[in-house]
Structures are given as C-alpha cells and as structure tokens.
Amino acid sequence: MDSQRTGNGYGPNALGFQAIGEWARLRGLVLKQWQLDAILAMDLKRREVMAQKDEAPEPEKPQVSERPLTARLFDALFPSKK
Image (cartoon, rainbow, N blue to C red):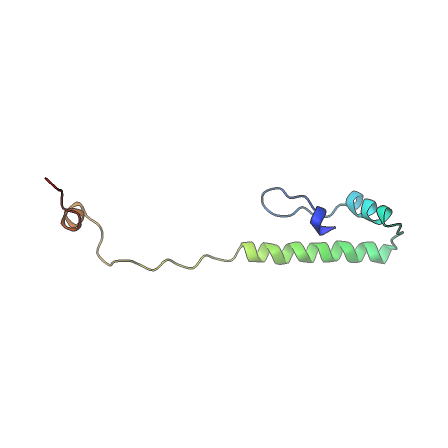
C-alpha cells in the first residue's frame, strides 16, 4: 500500500479507508476490524517516525573566519587589476 500512497509536498498522506478497502478487494481479502485497526496504527506510527527524521536540525556550519568581511578586507584579499 505504501508504494501507492499519495503525498502533499510536506510528507506522505495517511492511508484512507478507501485505499485500504481497494487494496483488500484487489487481493480478495475481507479484513477483520482488528486487522484494519492494526493497519491504521502502523500507518500512523510510520508517519510519526518519518516526521521526526524530517525535523532533525541541520548541523551548524563551521565559522570560516573570526574577522568580519569589510570593504577594506575585501580589497586587500582581491586587489583590483588596473
């Protein structure tokens, strides 16, 4: 079912009853209530885990120099060719 899941640009959409029902129908299955509950619970947990990965903070970029770039420093590093 996951390979046919839709997304909204912010992550995967939840599996809906229609998608689960169609999946079961195509396979000739009649799901029991506990099986449907298990599918929905696993789907919710999967989306929670994936959301945590997306929210991981980016590592800080190392500071290149302690000196702020000024016009005078820029000119010293890149002298004009006359």
